[in-house]
Amino acid sequence: MNQSGIFRRVKPNVWQWTINGHNYSIKRYANKGTADKVRIVHQQLKKASFPNILPVIASDDPTAIVQPWASNVRAVKFNRIEERTKTLDLLYKLHATNSDINWSEFGVFLPQYDLQLKWQDRLSKFKAKKEQIARFLGEPAVDQLIIYAEQALKSMQPVENKKPTILHGDVVHHNFLMTEKGKVYLIDFDLAAVGHAEDEIIMWMHRVLPHVDYNLPKLLEEQPLLQGFPKEHLLAIRYPNELLREWLYVDVIATQRKAAFVEELVAFTKVALSSWPKLWYDSGSVK
Picture 1 (spheres, rainbow, N blue to C red):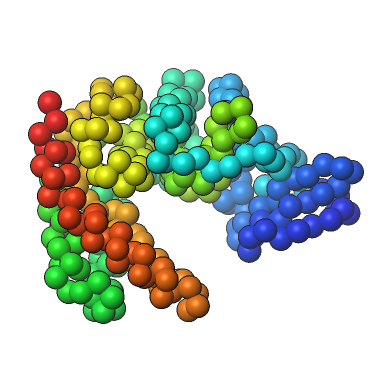
Picture 2: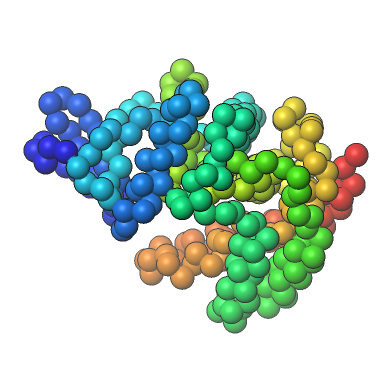
């Protein structure tokens, strides 16, 4: 990769590179393995004619991923029905590539995704920080989150007899970029893994439920693709994943931003907890 041109740092490990009138994104990883994984995922998706990724450009830096700079795009908004629909459709298309690609063959690069194990680990970390979090949220609310998480883990049903596929691994809204013409691209495959599609759809539902007031029946009715979702796996919705993750994130927030972040998170948690009894019931009563 030519080192001339102009570099502008946009994130700790991401730069905008301008050369010969063209703009590129350069993302450098701490190790070559992650960069190799991202390259392999892009290579395979290109072979499968998956159109919703940005191309990877050859580079002489083994720890870097170089791509065209995405201009005139924005992160999708999960509070918009049409954008929820487009992102869900994109995930289903991503998962469907297992009809052309045996993703399990890339086990050296793509780890096995175990949702229950991941959530058990997250709950353990949350419990370890119980006292610190209770100072902000109050002990009763913290205890309630722990009870919901423990009971949800007990009720989760394993996905069986399904062919594993690629999972993006981080379906946050800003990893879906929408163009002015409405096309959506999926970016940042750093956490890509091999697992069951149902687990990633559950993660997507966790992300969008706050934007529909935790109304699961409404979301299922709104999205035709979800109407065939296995009902037994909806029990995973009961795990308060977003809440636990955000509270664990408090420790890494800069001091000057922490007070405002915690204030918003306390309000967010109170709304979520008030909605959880109905969400719990709805997840077990869908027909």
